[in-house]
Length: 310
Image (cartoon, rainbow, N blue to C red):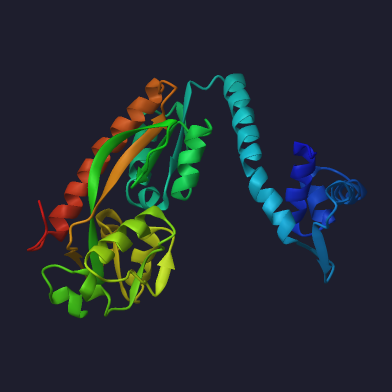
């Protein structure tokens, strides 16, 4: 019903909130932009924008359309990038996807070191929620994904890098700091910020609470564990997150305590099952695995306390 060019025009108008701005961005005339939007609305049978103070505000329907069409733009960009690579004679490329925790704690150093060692290789990094990270690998828009707590997907193959422990990050003045281990019962009495139950890690934490007879009810919910750790770093509450995220947010005045019952999250690399990974991708996975091992050893040495499992 709609072609990619029409969706591109719709996206530009949503971005700039005016047909003039969209026209300048796309190198088209303003009347052409307006006519295209009117045509799309006529075809669809519902409005895409509301005019407020000479600016166009997208309707909920317009935003849903754009969200659903985003994979098309990603695929187009991937094809265009491949054509550019071929034209410029670049030797190789690695497209990496990751959740925010690893994009902060491990991947920056891996990418910097890899780029220094192999300057002819182009590297791209997409940071997304877990489901979206796995989807871009399945769709061929990324060569490898690095994830925490993945789940079975028929089109993907997982390579275990390590297992990350769940730990409690809190102020050294918090009552939890005096404990050798922090339990669900201890956390129910504290201002808790943590992963939302709607995502896989939040569900795993909630299940560990239920096993001890308590409900997991964070006062502040986050999608990513590093965001929860940063909120504690900036002075509010306590959190239960993976040890890499906790260590990345650690500063003087904060402490890390082990969580009991023991809860571990698989740190993995995900690649397409039906496609052999390129030499560059395999080399990058090896570099990530090596750097992750060093980082985890550093974390455990710095945060070791009585009560931590080996």
